[in-house]
Image 1: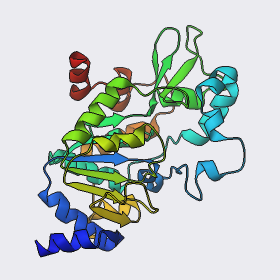
Image 2 (image 1 turned 90 degrees about the vertical axis):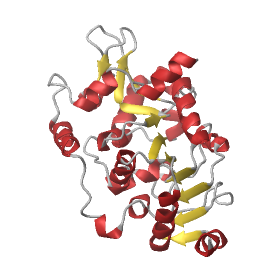
Image 3 (image 1 turned 30 degrees about the vertical axis):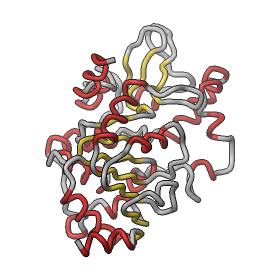
Image 4 (image 1 turned 180 degrees about the vertical axis):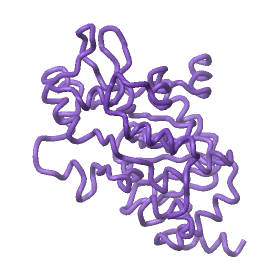
Length: 304
């Protein structure tokens, strides 16, 4: 009891101390939900958006303008040129944070991942309970016939990627000016509302409506992991200043943690895939069958 009181009294910690405090919280938790942003994937080589080195701080065109619905229709060639150069990272691999979340899901302690990222790394790490509220680069559809195409089709194309039927292939990512998928939102909000511990990591919480998802959390422990201050810090039980990948793993296991052998094989298949006509990987089949294809989302569709 004294230790718990101490954590509440001094709730802002650096990485090392924060990791220990987080482990104590996780040990007492039964339903953990993870809400993550771009900072989760920076250790995988994918830059974030709003930090000092982020995409939005670089010189050049306004990313919010180019990554908008209106710009996509006005100048699709310009959109895809920017999209390929700045949003596609085919060699990115899950880092220590992704692997730890996979372990927590295997223990049935992690009940859901709500991610703002479009990189698909949580699924590549093996997690199944993933709500990709901004979509994913791995699901691309013909705007005319609805045919599925993997990320490599868009990456390896020139100009405007097109289906065999002639239709434009559009990534299933949420552009500025587009609404979020209502079924994904239903599942994500449900998991957050039922959690006893919510971990918010690698996000400035400056993007709406995703940031408002936290309003539905009524559990005991709100943990914030971020290098900079966030609007949720004041409400949080525990605030950890540092890198997500360094906090979400034990120091002794940081270099030793391995993924499920099937997932390691899948990673190799993903890395070797450069021909869009080659056999689909397991992850690609998941996205082809529908980015909402899991039991939770299927249940939500039945209940709406």
